Length: 443
Image (cartoon, rainbow, N blue to C red; front, side, top):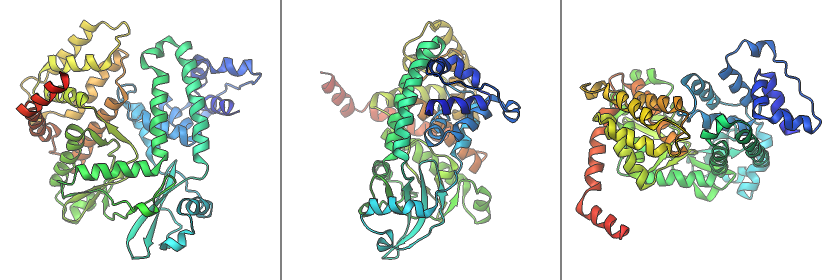
């Protein structure tokens, strides 16, 4: 029945051809279920990316999260599709507070009104998996309470099993999809979504990032109140400030916008390049600007991880882009894409070299690192090559970060901010102690 519902929604949104091509229609016909392929007139007038976004929104939390993940895959989807999938980040209709109370009581082991002096029944925000309410602890501390939607885990687990089956059908029925490894993408999505369902895991990620950024006093990560936090509910300090959507307020209230752009870039670059553990979703709704030109990162649900080897490769790629070394860029990207699936590697390498070489002689301050990374993914997409998911997250974070920096300060240049840190990391990598340690490990 759920498969029938999914295909019905897609066909009603004018995406019935996709369902037929993937092979799901044949499965349903063999099960004796008939489908109507007529698209509604209003859907037929929309662009395919809009229809896909509406279908995902209609199908519920698993598919909303799938769309949000697809918004990070700049290597697989063109900008028009990415823009549509990003709209799935918007708030969803809230659950009535009375329906959430049993979930909170189970998580806390008692009535929430015994824990909180005040708990606002009107949500601050509502998303596909949880909603957030403002509250006050007995000692007067201002906090936010993030509550998982009731029954959401069972719904998501059922949909994930179904998605894995659909991916297997797609991989066998559509050879053109094989380079993108649909089943692997679904497995990676399932791991990410299960982590996001566990609020305690997200809080551990937040604390790890907070520890890594302790040397940057102008960056705030909300403190976790562990005595009230678990898988279903988490309680963190309330952060009151100006959101990334209210940039005009920053000017009106005397904030130093160029300084905020630099500080945000320094924090994210440190997470990515130095720590290898980063907030993978730094969109304007997840960033608050605080008095004293400080900034806070909230909602660390989606994180990226980079191994030491990946960070070394990233250093080579970014320095190759910033310092216009096309062979370094080509070498890294060819390693990342792995199996060539019949791609003409010499042609791909030539295109990458021509792309990087066009920036030869361009002043560093005129380079857009985010745009350069986006353009590189276009080349990969044209050759039907997909990046590993950790790198797709990374490139998306870079592009989002540069966009936010330019929003704060039109004169912001990611390449200028990145170059000193990149060079510092290269120097650190080739210190005698580091070389000796790697030699010993190799031995």
